[in-house]
Image (cartoon, rainbow, N blue to C red; front, side, top):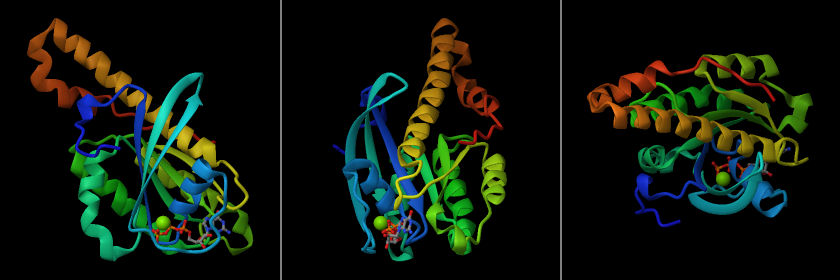
Length: 214
Ligand SMILES: Nc1nc2c(ncn2[C@@H]2O[C@H](COP(=O)(O)OP(=O)(O)OP(=O)(O)O)[C@@H](O)[C@H]2O)c(=O)[nH]1
Ligand SMILES: [Mg+2]
């Protein structure tokens, strides 16, 4: 990806997705499973990795541009730039790691603050669902947190390849919905330029308190 490209120069087929979550929650394993169909068994902490994959989501072609970020705190200084670059976000925790669940709220907060918005396309992902015997976070807790975020929720396993595509595809769907909201507001502004000042307010009003479960 040419990271200097401005958002408004992006093609309609490109979807910029950023994966956030605590170190070791499985961001890289999920992304590698999606893009290379292979489970990365060894833990090699990420600094920053970028992936590109062409897929069909609901019969529409799209290029997913996926940024796999560092969960380790020592690289947290780079996050503010990622918040601005991303159009959609996967907030990933591991179901067998309570601390990783406690951390996702911080990412959600910082995304909204960086975007100066109270709604962004987000999918909350409970990974390592294959480790049910070590579970520290129940499905319902994940579901409830997603409700408070007003976002979708899904449990995945990068290891057994459960719901990996679905998590990323759902993020594409959330981005499409968000773009459609903007497009309809923009066309209203073209008809009535006085509405321009209130665009941000209109977007905020359109916030949905929804939680889709998969
Ligand atoms: N059992 C199981 N292990 C997983 C799963 N996903 C990831 N792992 C393992 O968990 C460890 C950490 O996974 P990573 O994908 O590297 O974690 P990360 O979130 O990218 O970590 P950072 O790059 O440090 O932020 C690795 O040993 C993976 O093999 C999963 O779904 N099930
Ligand atoms: Mg990683």
